[in-house]
Amino acid sequence: MTKNRALFLDRDGVINVNYGYVHRKGDFHFIEGIFELAAAATARGFLPVVVTNQSGIGRGYYSERQFNRLMQWVCLQFKRRRAPIAGVYFCPYHPEHGVGRYRRDSPFRKPRPGMLLKAARELHIDLERSVIVGDSASDMKAGAAAGVGRLFYLRSDETAPLPELPPEVRIVRSLTAIVPELNF
Ligand SMILES: [Mg+2]
View 1 (cartoon, protein in one colour):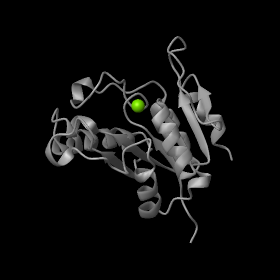
View 2: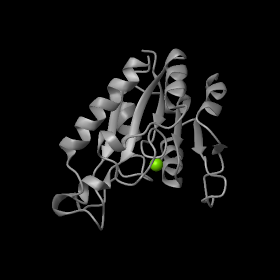
View 3: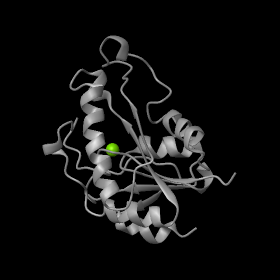
């Protein structure tokens, strides 16, 4: 069977402006270029897949139900723009700040690659031929650990300090700058 390729997208800071623990539609502001990137990737045969740490759930700031409802709406916005999201993977746990059952060290929490590996299994994704876009070192480390072929670090604020990143990471100033890089 021919394997799929994915456009893995971090959520906060890549899909939407990261105000911190965003969980309401009214606070969900899409980042410029995200639909253009997702639609271009879809047209080239990539499956857009969301991979997001959501310790806000574990911390008790919002529930899984609220998260899922918001993401249903987010997915509808992508579908309307010809870029249907193939999967949403989230990790609600936090090793120190999680409350109750959410307090645990999870192999799914980035920088660990668990979410990417699970998506690859479930959606038959060839990781080597896939792409990940993130705005934190943990996104890039998770991508590198999973063996994702191309890693893009979105650095929209040039004045922000640059974290230490895996050597294969490419730094981009905008989401649309990734579009020409999808031809491989
Ligand atoms: Mg982020």
